Image (spheres, rainbow, N blue to C red):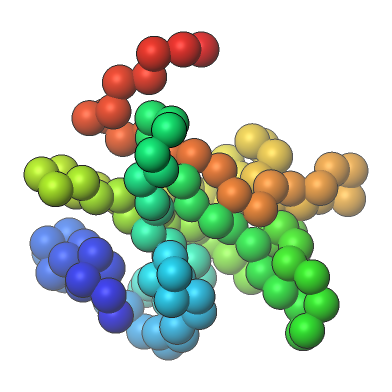
Amino acid sequence: MDKNLYQIKTEIYDKCSLEISDFKTESKEYNACRIELNGLHVLSRNAKITPNKVGQFVTFWKRNGSGPIEPFNEKDRVDFFAVNVRTENEFGQFVFPKSVLIKRGILSTEKKEGKRAFRVYPNWDTVKSK
């Protein structure tokens, strides 16, 4: 478990009686993992600060076997997607329910392909354009 998820666990999950189980490591670049949180299926990723844009960038894709990467699908066993964000002085976590990911076009559906990555905007970032 990386330091961001560990900090969320000790400062929030433990205090709310949320127990992590079935921890599975995925991509090291984004400290990606799958966990169960009180029986709910959660994908966790660390977002990255990029040099030219406000906000933080996070990947959200899977690989089926040795084939190309693809977006997660509404039929995948995922209840929530947790995105950990950090700067030198700030730290937080976005938690997106599956229903929101479908509504926003992040998860693939029968009608539309989802996204492989997106940007999150913590409240400490100031967005200058619409």
